[in-house]
Image (cartoon, rainbow, N blue to C red; front, side, top):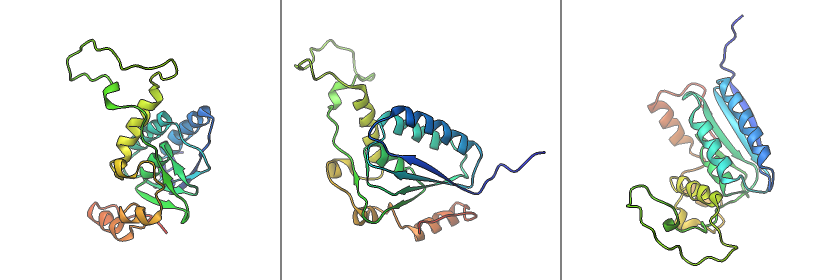
Length: 198
């Protein structure tokens, strides 16, 4: 017997931990399975103090981008968020945040000149002096990509290193956009099953 794959509204909890990369790998697999069920909407609750590693945040982004277009993502920050967790929250079609919660992302510790570029001629150049404790961390390169993606929503150069509260998020139209959401839903014919922030 064939059953309908459309399952209405589903919730998915993502705990923000200060450790445990294996937790995120497991949750990403469960997120893929949940999205494979083709729900009309999926609410991702972000809870806890800590930071999602940059690579995990980028992987979550790739999973969300691969979902079927009719699945609406609602992100709900029930805690303050930092770094990669900020990116995951921003990926929602609709975003909610606890009234006293804040967003935070730091500046990168790498400069752009430390990344190899394919479009420039390959030259042998002596690297700048580094002591034995200052090796380049590939995770930091992933974090730069996270910042580039956050910059599509918020001006990273101006806001990095600052706590970002609800008034700023409202100013950038990232929360409480019932009118804008309604207009977009009408314009793109997605008014059925539309969920807006409450």
